Image: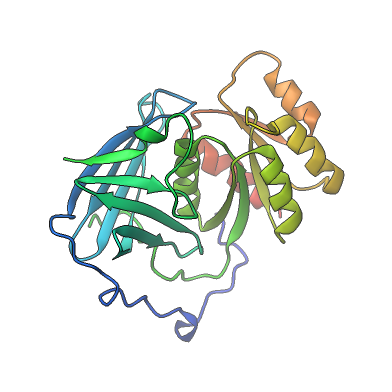
Length: 127
Length: 137
């Protein structure tokens, strides 16, 4: 519904895909499913699963624990450098996670750990 | 990977990106909203309180719509909306709050909000309401 009136880009206008191979610092066993329930002021929490694969693709699922609101998923490619996972969205936004000992921690837009009273819970555990 | 999910890191086929200012101090809710909006090719800029939202609104060109949490530190959503309305009377401001008490809706509308949604807001309702206002732009 939001695409009305938009100009479609020519193929030559597409940005070249990021070359990730050179940036990836291989960490043993980083691939897998990471799960946690992020605390939310709206409900008990948001079930979050981040699946990381060795081919630098990921799937992220989030759904409210109230089971009334539909979940939402996305997939794409990430880069891994200095244990920081970077997802660069086509809207221009980025999202960061810190990989650490079978866990991933959510980072804010400045690559800092998320602050706040619930910050300790913003961690997904490898399953 | 599942084929029914769009790859949101691939270049888009269109340059039509709307800009949404999200004022939300709750990290998890903010990430959920961002995820939903990314599927709609909407670029979300995120403020963690009303004061930051006001600054972002002043300093960010071409914001199309605002999702405004109400209970936030430093400056709440009511005050932030009142300040934004001093600058712009037209931009849609949708209140987004965990409060569902009687009178909250009227209080949000009186502050200048255009509409009101209660958290946890369903993905479909969020897309529908945001889309309805963007379609009018």
